[in-house]
Length: 148
View 1 (cartoon, rainbow, N blue to C red):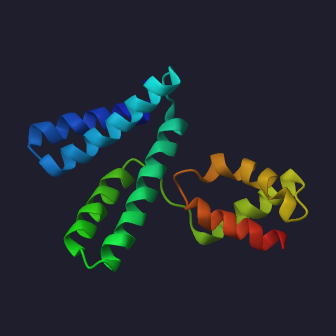
View 2 (cartoon, one colour; view 1 turned 60 degrees about the vertical axis):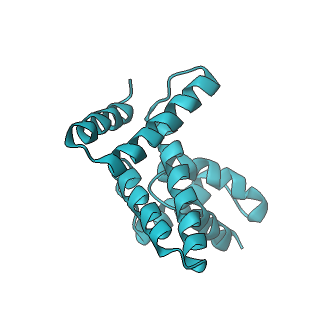
């Protein structure tokens, strides 16, 4: 069992003991998403795979927050923010803008990317380094800006 999955399982147990139903619900949702992916792929996930799932969950909730806020549904947006905070506990420390720029520059150099058509090469090198630590759409925009 990966260390990240162990941390999530331990957090579920702690939330159950504490009787924290909102936190428990979010943690169970995370566990269910991980188990579903393992069943679908018929293999045990490692930390990198779990980070991809957590990153996707945060992205979905950010999109929901935007929709709820534009519709004036502040209570639903607040619930999504609470879930983002809980999921975020298991994500690594976010990268600063300077760190992202350094990684983008290094990936472009290391991949030999020269123009926008080579963007996939640079992104292929960057994705494992920034997964769960930066918004991939922001990273993609930075790579695109460097290559234009």
